[in-house]
Amino acid sequence: MMDGETIKEPPQEWGPTAWSHLSAVRDRSLLIQCITNFVSMDLVANTLLSVGASPAMLHSTEEIPDFTPHVHALYVNVGTLSSDWLPAMMAAARLATKLGKPWVLDPVAAGASRFRLNACLELLQLKPTVIRGNASEILALSQASLAPTTGVDSSHESMDAVEAAKCLAQASGGVVAVSGAVDIITQGNRLVGVHNGVPMLQKITATGCAVTALIAAFVAVDPLHAFEATVSAFSVFGIAGEMGMEQAKGPASLRMHLIDSLYGLDQVALLSRINITTALPGHDT
Ligand SMILES: Nc1ncnc2c1ncn2[C@@H]1O[C@H](COP(=O)(O)OP(=O)(O)OP(=O)(O)O)[C@@H](O)[C@H]1O
Ligand SMILES: Cc1ncsc1CCO
Ligand SMILES: [Mg+2]
Image 1 (cartoon, rainbow, N blue to C red):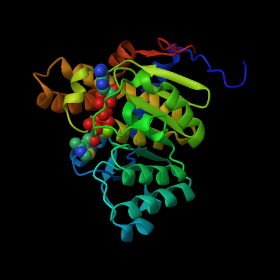
Image 2: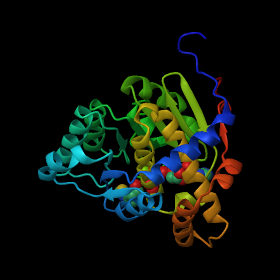
Image 3: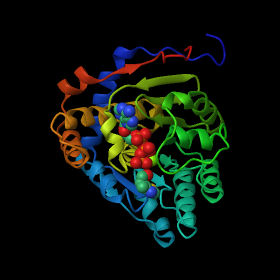
């Protein structure tokens, strides 16, 4: 293989990988510190609880030295960022990095303001294990796009951000994930697409924040394989969305059935529904 060439992954391996990650998360009572936005706190906490993890929404700077050393992973989400929250995000991320704990960044609306973009760039310096955003956020962050985004929703398709994601992964040294109809996950010379999920997930606020929290839990069980953990978390969340949609009447009931489906997801359903590709249309892998 030539340097820089993308490795072709054997897709048949992903079902057992995702199942073993979900089983490990369920078995281990993982403590996940979440410094997340006000909109997402409820869905993030309930998503983590549904897979057996313990969410803790502690965001005071004063508590970080006592608490962060005990967590299995840290989740930082800048959705409702203000200047008084940034020091806690930075301190927690710095301590997690120093202690060798995985931490995951959700750069919500990264391009919406100079303040937010600078905050995200400062957080990037602290080497997140995984960065998960929508296409507009990843484009803004990788500075492939200098135009401001319109808000927290994506105005781009995830495929638009493939090259930006690869650049950001190389620059940051972490895993970069772009959510969308196809979730793109990349690190170094690896790249896969997760095709699970339903469009209605976009009609529930904070499902992106929730899948990032799930990634934090999955990475906590397997910090040395953050790429596999991230792909697994996306497929589990997407499958739960598909199964939830079979019972839902609209976004509000999908939110409820999504959580129930995450809680009840079994091996047979996961193995039969997982849909992962390694060759993306229009991208020569
Ligand atoms: N068109 C689609 N088809 C299937 N699944 C989708 C689609 N768009 C998004 N998803 C899924 O919805 C979830 C949220 O992704 P999305 O890209 O909407 O995040 P986001 O924009 O960061 O959301 P938020 O900011 O509200 O948290 C992911 O699990 C993603 O796979
Ligand atoms: C709607 C909204 N505004 C800031 S954060 C957030 C939740 C989705 O990211
Ligand atoms: Mg988001």
